[in-house]
Amino acid sequence: MTNVATVSVHASGYLLHRHHPMTQYPRQPDVDLLGLEFDADGRRARFELVPGVARHDGALYGGTAIAVSVATMEAATGRGSLWVTTQYVATAQLSDIVECTTDVVAMGRNVSQAQVTGRLGDKVLFTSVGSTAIPREGGLEGQFVPMPEVSQPEDIKPMVFGPAQASGFRGFTAQVEYRLAEVHGPKGSVSQLALWARINGDRPATPASIAFVADMVPGAIARAVGMVGGGTSLDNSLRFGRIPDDEEWILLELRAQMAVGSHAHGSVKVWSRAGLLLAVGGQSTNMRQLVPEAEWEKLGAAGGNAE
Image (cartoon, rainbow, N blue to C red):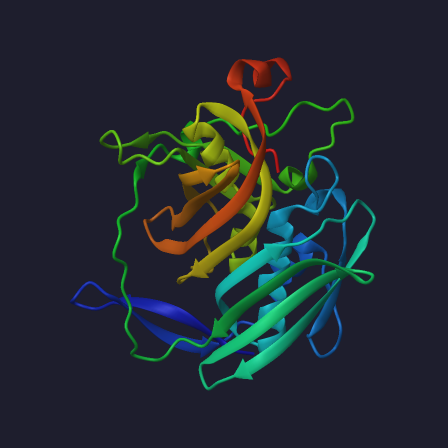
């Protein structure tokens, strides 16, 4: 068991937290979402590549790899996630069993450092590095950027991702609901893509589930050049803030940054409905799957990321 927090507001406007020994790792919602099975020591885990954690083509979804890395680091250290960076090396296919090993390379009083490797047999699929931590009582707290003004999820229809398939195969989007938000603000200040997202089944947001749904930067890059589609992720990084226990809908504020020779970079901010910044991150991707919007519509799609 480790620490979670209750929140009170100091007169200065900063958030103060008192910690209670309640959270247990791995978090059960993450185990259910990802289909994880852990060894007794928490440092080895595995999952089967079933449709709910796969891309639309049946390959390993990048959001699954980073989410598994978060969940396994927390399980191995008994602490909540602070940051994670995942490098995508190779892929797997439906029915494959992915083995994950976590090496805890440092275990400090408040901060742990860990490395996660996901393998299919002898083949490395992904590697991750990151930290977990226990928040310091009375330490610096604050939020220094505002949430954009957006339309609310109740006012928006759910999105459909990827070209229609006769089989009805939906991959990871069978576990997630996305809604395209309208962002209000001066020209040039508005992100290329803003998505409300939630895990189906009334499950609250966790660092791992945020990582699972936030693998959407390629969609923003496509939109920035007037196209629809996405790409193959090369890496993905997230840095986590406070995540309330009862958060359901989260907002992904996605921005394209730059591209060179089809290799592109972008960023994401993750917000609660109340305007709390839950996470920030960045992603690099190989943008090989771009089509004009009119052609995408002919394929029977209504937006999204080709991953």
